[in-house]
Structure formats: C-alpha cells, structure tokens
Image 1: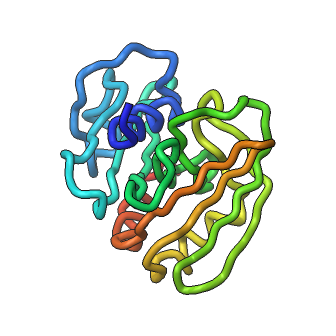
Image 2 (image 1 turned 135 degrees about the vertical axis):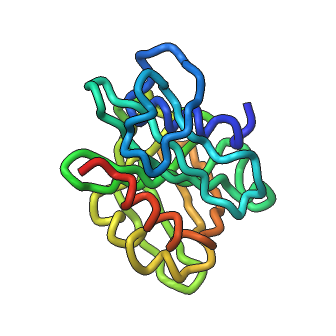
Length: 190
C-alpha cells in the first residue's frame, strides 16, 4: 500500500475510528463536527502534490466528539519505502501530538529511538512509544512545541526511527506547516 493511501487510513485509526466501519466522507470543516455525525473519516483533502498538508476529521466514540489531524507524506525520493510521513493531531485536554507514520509496523510495545534533524540545523534524539498497533511512532510531548514554533520556518526534517536492528529513514518537507497548524488548532475540540 502506498504511503499516500496509508496515512489517511492510519490517521483514522489513530483518531479513534479503528473500531467502526467506514462510512461516507461528509465535509465538516468549520462546522465543529455538526455535519460530521455518523461519518467515520471526514474531509480528507483531494489528492495533491506532497507539498500539501492533508486535513482529516474523525468522529469520536461520544456523540458530537470529533478529532482533527494534519498530515504530510514523505519525500519518496529521499525516504525508505517503509516511511510514510508525519502526523500532527489534536489530543485530549488541548494537547497536540506529533507522530511518525510508518508502512511497516514495529511491535506495539516497542520504544524506538527517533532522531530528528532540521534542515536549518539542530538534531534531537527522543525515546518514543508506539500508536496504532505499531504503525505510528508517538513522539514525546515536548516535540509538539517544535511543531508549534521552530518547524514552521524549517524547510524539511530528516527522521530516523531505530528499533532493535531495524532502522527506517525519511524526509518530510515542512512548507505550509504554519497555515496547516493554525487550521488544525482552529478545528481542535478543546
């Protein structure tokens, strides 16, 4: 399955839709979830170049509850085939989560080391955890501050995920992150 198709599917499972059947997509941007009721995955941007951040909204398990995320697919010319991209999602209690989406999952209880290098300089290594049955790496809370700030003026990120003897490398262009992040915040259910 290509990374372009996997990320919206993965986002649905990360945002709580994995236990429901897939329904028709019904746009609900700016509607605070009112027209989303009954839909599992809602409002995925039309296929476009990898320079566009995709927005998704998934209905939660409670009536009127919905979750939003933005995602960016990997630069396939500079990434391993198992690296899908980056997801920034709304989390409970006003938190923002940052995840690395993978094609080939790691064991769900693993704690990979993730090294992120910004194209403008600076490299950080984090201990991470797994989400979505091992198909996404949940980065620690402090990474959300980078998505809210420094990364918005950084051209791209190089990401390396290591677990045991396995290593997956990827590159994600960050152009358009500022606008996508602001749109995400405006659509988070706080």
